[in-house]
Length: 226
Image (tube, rainbow, N blue to C red; front, top):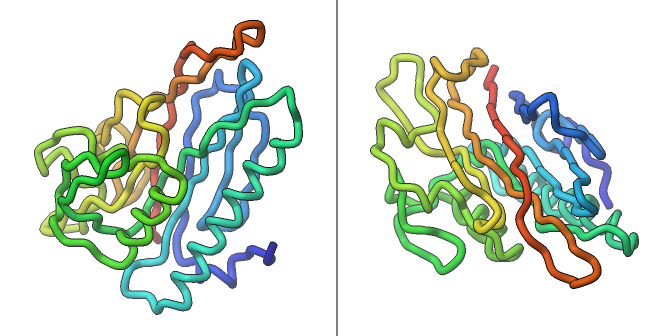
């Protein structure tokens, strides 16, 4: 695995994952100001949350290629590290944060639910969709109907421009109560609004070799641009 550092990702901002105080953290790894990993081990189930802050779409391909390659490396490293432990069931990751991407209006089975703010697709949006397809996980935002006034995740200082560029991507059957919080509900001195969801942790019943959903986790994400 290549060394991941701030220089290689062209860091110019910050991102954060907010987790409730009562949530036990199994592992925490900050790779740089663009990629961070939080893992939770509950009922023998390992859940990996990967917070990201992607380069803006107008960056050159080399910068974006390097960043998304690093995201893929982090995913593989985070998941494969515990796969050797037979006592742990490793779930697909939840990837969340500022993708700086537009993913358009077209529905894609199990990937894009058809709800959107911007009908355009940019290069970062294509990369986001490709990542979701590779992992067979869903862009959760697109499964919730919202007015544009409630859907945007970023706005400029004068509030004249608004975009949906922050996403939660994961196993749709395990993610509920997706919300985009207003600045008054959750403010961190940012031009981004926080995105929030509940993640249902499967409970493993070993004797029957079945899994059932038990309990929820509240995850909030905010991005800060200097």
